[in-house]
Length: 363
Image 1 (cartoon, rainbow, N blue to C red):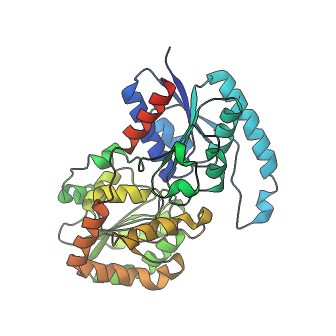
Image 2: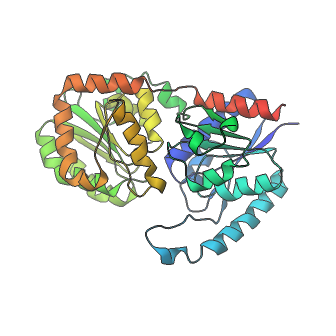
Image 3: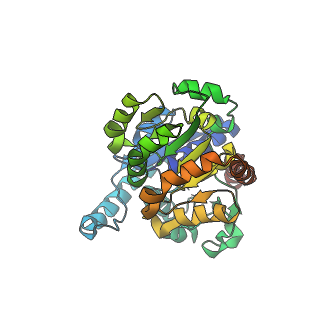
């Protein structure tokens, strides 16, 4: 009889893409395995998971809103409702294991599985664990950590450092720079900067780039700019005005963007591990409202190793464009950053995680 596994989580590409990498590695080892994703209704996993060929069921769940306490009024109701929905999913699918990758749906799914005595596995992609994962980790069968030093959050006996799963199309990136640039209709003679605020965009990055475009273009910098939904129209107006600018809400061919880029400007969530794998000079602008400010911790870990640069979100408007221009002129510094960030790459995290899960389930 084929194994049945639930994978829960999502919300951003930083959770979705590692989840898909784990699913693909499990299917590679056991092609007959049934994998069902559980996500949060209204979040991007409800589109991205089916596009990758996997079924998904959405539940009605939201996270704690730190910026508006009034919005948390319905949270207890949603949490109770989500547990009832999860119970129906488990009764129908009857999984033998549940994997949590982060995101709103992880907590009710893994908590319910643990109450039923079903093996649970957590992947913690950040260097500072969130409260939900810490709580779930007390009863988890295995915890897979992207970073070292996570014993302060999880039981050491069940903790395995695996790295963070990276999309295979990114790892297999042997696309020449010229081909990557051609994908976006850009010119090989200019320095190319990839700006990505993650799958949902980032207002501070968008505003800083928006204000700095005249100086960037004048300085011979061309942009691949993933804006997210909220800034799409405004950014597109710049692309019409200059052939040195490509903009889009979401980059589906990120392997081409990495191939084309000489420098990357990015948030510092799970995308950090892809940037290690592709060996690009990076300027991180951490999202300041992430749980426990984990993006700042993530970025600082690389800055200490001279593997990346960092600008605080509050300083992006004043400092980001000037830092891009400074780094673009400093080829030796770019080479040092590329070499050091490449040393941190882990390219087989998905296989390690799949192997440990199957070893546990197979006894």
